Image 1: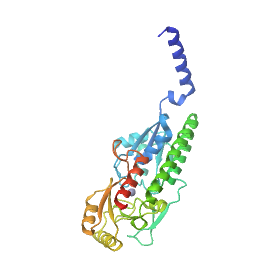
Image 2: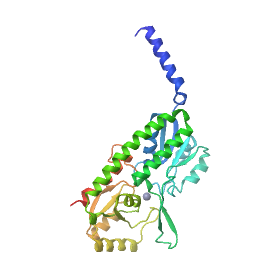
Image 3: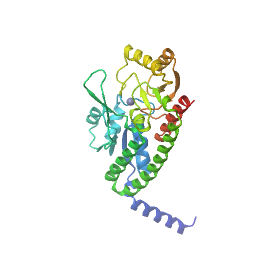
Image 4: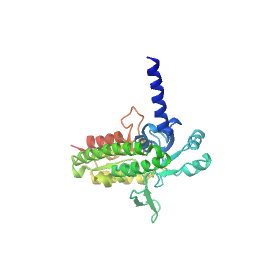
Length: 300
Ligand SMILES: [Zn+2]
C-alpha cells in the first residue's frame, strides 16, 4: 500500500471517529434484567451498545439471587432495562447495593396487564408479568427500548430507529407465522398444562388455554392438593399434553403426565432463552420453538 493511500485511510478513519463520538468512547453499557429482554435490547441497540444480562439462559427471573459481580455490572450501566409488572422483586435491593444512577427503563410500559385472583389469598389480585409472550407486547417493549436508547445516546437516534424498524418487521412476520400455526391446531385441542402460569398473554393473544399447578410465579411449590386438582382437570377435560419448561424442575410435570395419562410435550421456553446454540437462543427462536412444540403435540 502506498503512503498516499495510508494517509487517506487514516484521514477517513478519523472522520468516521469524529462523526460518531459515542462509538469512539466505547459502546453504551446496557443491562437487561433477563435474557429475553437482553435479546430485544441487542436487536434495537445493534453495535452501538453492549448488553449484560443479569438472569441468563435457562435462569428463573422470579427467584434470582444477585452476586457481587451483578452489583458491579449494574454499577457500570448507562441504562438498565427491566420487565416490570412485578417480575423482578429482587431489583430494588440490587439497585441500592450498586449505587447506580442509570435510568431504569420499564420495557412493559404501555402494555395492558393481565390480572387474576390469587388462589391462595382470595380477594388479592395478582399481575401476570409474562407480557413478552404476546408478540404485540414485545413490539411495545421494542418501542420503549428505542426511545430510552435515543435519550441516553442521542447521536445514535437514527441507528436505533432503523434497527427497531427492521426488527419490528421481523416481529410482524413472526406474528403471522404463529397465528397460522395455531390455526392448524383443532380448537378443542388448544389446551395445555405447563408447570407455571407463564403463557397467559400468549393464550389471550392467540386463542389457547393454559393451565398450571403453580400460578404466575415460581416462588412457591404447588401443594399436593393443587397437583391432584390438575390431574382431575386433565382427565375431565381430556387435555392432551403436559409440557416442561426450561426454567423449572421437570419431575413434577413427569409425575402429572404419568398419573393423568396425558402425553409429555416438549420443552417450552417461558421466562428465559436457551444458550445461544440451543433451540431458543433469541426471542424469535423462542416463540418459534414453543409454537412448534404445541403443533407437534396437538395437531393430530
Ligand atoms: Zn414466570
